[in-house]
Image 1 (cartoon, rainbow, N blue to C red):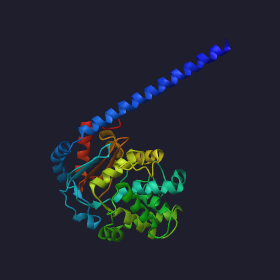
Image 2 (cartoon, one colour):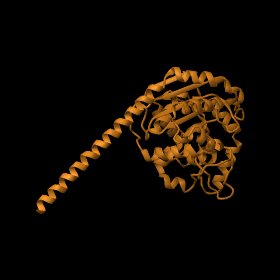
Image 3 (cartoon, rainbow, N blue to C red):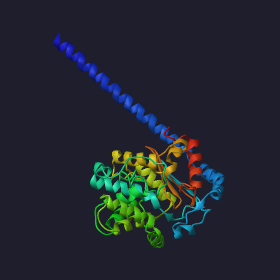
Image 4 (cartoon, rainbow, N blue to C red):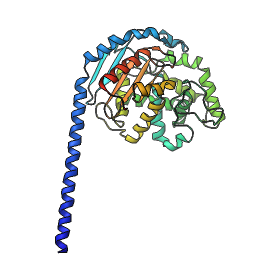
Length: 343
């Protein structure tokens, strides 16, 4: 009798296991079909249509000129790139236009710093918070001493300084990681922009010394030079789409390379992009676009659609928050038309 009951229990467990496996396979199949359908909806024609209807918004923005070299950008240049879930890349607009990555480099620096020192060690010196302050605000440094998050300049300067290595080692690590993610060895720094940033970056220099005074940074001003250099790296909209894809897919490269695969790290970076990646516009942006994104005053925006795709847009005319006006409009229309928002 006991043996018979044991056999019945075994049979029940086997049946349950088979059912669970079956449900899992069905769920995977549904997800794959959903991805395929979405990929099919994204066409060059759709993307070009959105660019055509939004490109005139550049008139509502202004090219950044507080860094003199940035002021030379063509305000009408527009590029739009998508890396689909299957790794296929579609580009429209001024796809060969190069621009400096600026603050989008902060997500790369954050990844390297956490890889080397761990999340706790870095966030003992920095916050997870969003803010209503501008990207270059001194927020919190004179009170609690800790930067609010790694996406504002204060937190980003600290994060880069936290990366191991003397001299320009930290910058080289960021450059090499960027080349890996994009599979683009031709990416280099724009020397003229770097020198312009270094010459006029007095506010960032003040932030550096406040951080040093608070005991959060060790070393000399060459650590700030690494920050100026990382912001001066030149990229294209396609490079930004590849960055977006990388973090959207757990640190998997667009060609499937999983050398740095780490879903937990990707979640951290996307969370910070979502709450602070668009500076003091991040809250409204979460409502209207609803995706982890990082902008730069060079006119680029990199976007992650979690577990799906990456998006890159470029136009150097900026709004009052320091975000690309045309880039935002393109993202708004594209995301809402395809219902890509997380919310």
